[in-house]
Image (cartoon, rainbow, N blue to C red):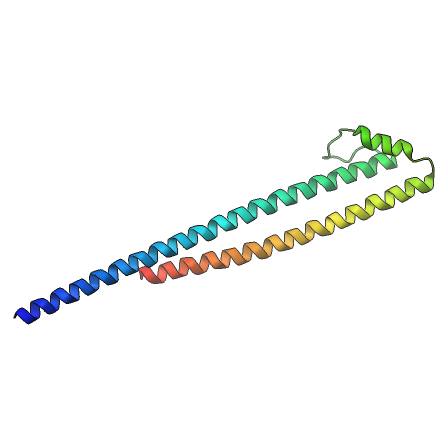
Length: 146
């Protein structure tokens, strides 16, 4: 009978250690999931800031184009005139100079639009990757709980 009790006590100790190990693994998985979530949120915030800056630059360029064309500002863009822009426009003496400046501005706008599209694509890929990693961490936690 002593053997049966000591065997049960050994089994209880083993099960307790397994429980402690499982709890440690669970805590590590929670920590990993929290870390991935923090990384995702940081990346998303950076992408949003970059996208906002790019949108602002595009709006400014559109406004500059409209001013160079002599038209009214585009709806939704800031109607604030920059004295530097006005001075630059006044320096343009010929139609050829104006056309060259317009070409440069349109080229820059196109480049910024492409950069914005690339950033949006990169953001979507990053979001997908981080979401997958977060999902994997959650699945791992679910399997450990089960």
